Amino acid sequence: MKTRVFSGMQPSGNLHIGNYLGALKNWVRIQNEYECIFCIVDLHAITVYQDPAELRAKIREIAALYLAAGIDPKVCSIMVQSSVPAHAELAWMLTCVTPVGWLERMTQYKAKAAKQESVGDGLLQYPVLMAADILLYQAGIVPVGEDQAQHLELTRDIAQRFNSLYGDTFVVPGTSLPAVGARIMGLDDPTQKMSKSASGANHAVALLDPPDKIRKTIMRATTDSLPCVDVTTAGPGVLNLLAIFQAFSGWNDDQMRQHFNGMRYGDLKKQVAEMVISHLEPFQERFRRITSEPGYLDGVLREGAERVAPIAEDTVRLVKQCMGLYTSPANAAL
Ligand code: TYM
Image 1: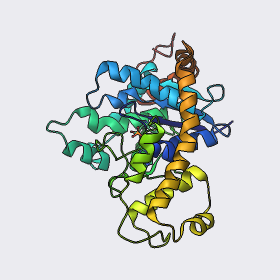
Image 2 (image 1 turned 90 degrees about the horizontal axis):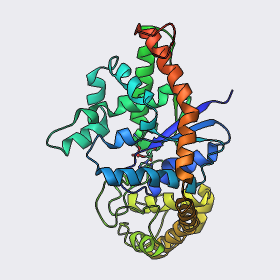
Image 3 (image 1 turned 120 degrees about the vertical axis):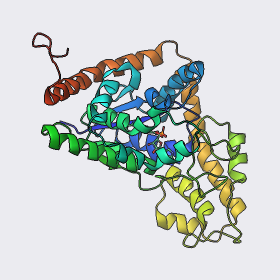
Image 4 (image 1 turned 180 degrees about the vertical axis):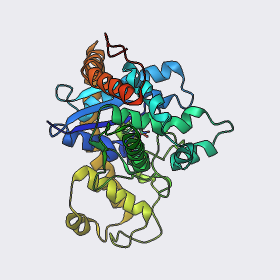
């Protein structure tokens, strides 16, 4: 039997090249090797307020972006988290075996909570719901960007704690990070991770940005005051541009060094911009085609949810039995 893979993205903000290079590109690469489930995690998105109409549209947009990137719905399941109620159900059961101290230590929680006057409980519980997403399907591998590594460690801790309390129940999942592009930094500030929620006009390249905008954003990227590229001593801004080029092109380190060492920053930026555009233009064309086909997206999402729901329900049933919760003998799912 193939190892199961699970990963997901939040339908909030605009997906950017960090999301693509850190996660989505990897998903496409491994989709035929494993049994893959790719989720649109709408329950995670509502841990901060979302305009309902915008959220509804974003869910569909993310699904279309998965498809445009090359995820094949015939071999993978693409589904929306809230359409399989077992995600929320298992999250509660896992909450009950998770010490609050583990959650308060999460760096993403601390960063997000620091920006808010009143912190919603959902923000603290966020990584437990993420653990539920993964453990629900007994996923062995979770392909993500580097910023999710701590949440994955917590998922393993929760799985191990549950297994030690109630007996072997969950597969303890591994993290899969891409060799290049696991942490793409903001183009306006290469000390900060490129983020969907950052507001700066030149912070990120969104996957649906038109070519002119992509050129402008990359040409304005922060570099440093050295005269030209030196791959070994480059500062964070130049390293980030090189990482973006390398992740899109697939070049090895030698090719990168030979091609870029000694190049002026203006030329480096032009080449990075053209590399990004050459990948995103056909991607955007596929996106337009997918979104213009009436009913297609909904069909993909319905099929995905129908395919994975029985796996999720089996796990919830097993967890209920392990914990001593009521399961009806006539209908074990109740
Ligand atoms: P999200 O929506 O913030 O990001 C989606 C994916 O993109 C990666 N990523 C990046 N990679 C490289 N450079 C960046 N600057 C960058 N920014 C984001 C993220 O690591 C992620 O892989 N909690 C998750 C969603 C989630 C999930 C899950 C993931 C919910 N349940 C279960 C895996 C398994 C999140 O907020 O991702």
